[in-house]
Amino acid sequence: MAHDRPPEREAPAGPRSDAEVIVRSRREPDAFAEIFHRHFAEIHRYAARRLGPDAADDIAAETFLVAFRKRGRFDPERGTVRPWLYGIVTRLIGLHRRSEGRRYRALARTPAENVHDGHEDLVAARVTAGDAGADIADALARLPRGERDVLLLVALADLSYEEVGQALGLKTGTVASRLHRARRRLREALGAEFKASITEEATA
Image (tube, rainbow, N blue to C red; front, side):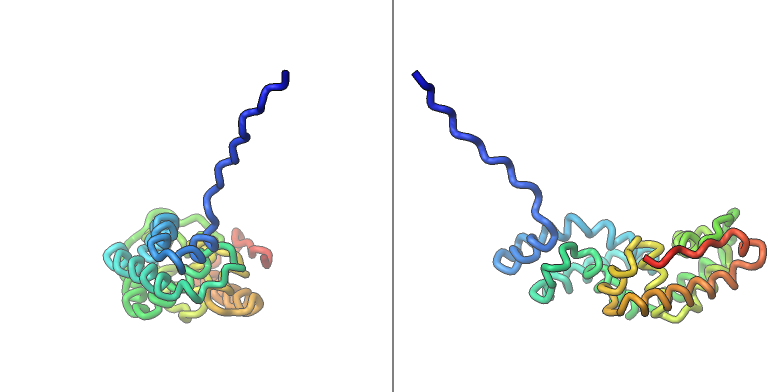
């Protein structure tokens, strides 16, 4: 006599993608909290590296407030919200560009321990952590805003050229040219002793 098979259990659903969460939050606003929990620490860290920890709390919180209000404009085809969030936080940081410049100039007055990294992106990351020399901190402070934004989105947020373009509303070619100019300026600030160790990153 054949025995009835027990009903098969459905496989548990995996976590929703960022895009799915955003779409759901348009109907259920409370769902947006998942985006906050997934990305707040990363966005806060980026803001802190650019403006310092005191300003980072407000900037990061405002980033998610703006994202919540504008969630209806997010294109689900993007898949991930990281470039979108980085675009928002970078624009907010731009409103505080004087504070950012003062931060780098203050870091430039602080003696750093040995700086041996030659790659411009690594150097930029170390400057924002307060771990680089005065010349480099000053050079970063002097970069045009557009070049500095591109450089630090690559160096700190580890975004690809395409993602930086999405974040800032730029074409990939424009991202590449701004990054090239920013790196060149930092190379000049590094001095001859470091130039031999510099390697240009291939275009993504």
